[in-house]
Length: 90
Image (cartoon, rainbow, N blue to C red; front, side, top):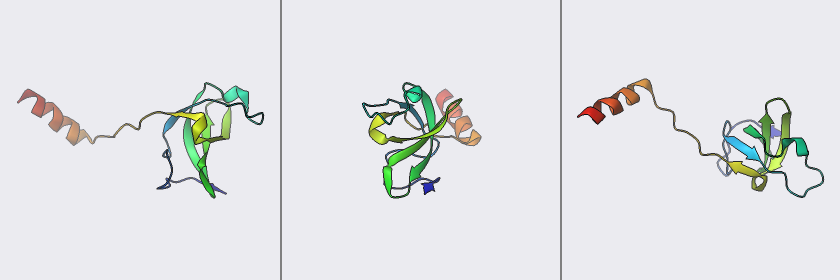
């Protein structure tokens, strides 16, 4: 079963960008190695097993230790951004 929502115990979040590094596992699809993708789900019984979508290749399962995890960017509201700009001029 695929969980397609954030899980508290998981090391990554849905929508987070990652780079895939296939290990020595012979079951790994080498086409994904070095590719950037987006986390789209978790395996229900093991949040260390992550579903990643790579454009042009589709979705595949990877363990967290096979991923380079990019930091999530905080989304700012337009109002917060405008207030930050105003405070910079003060």
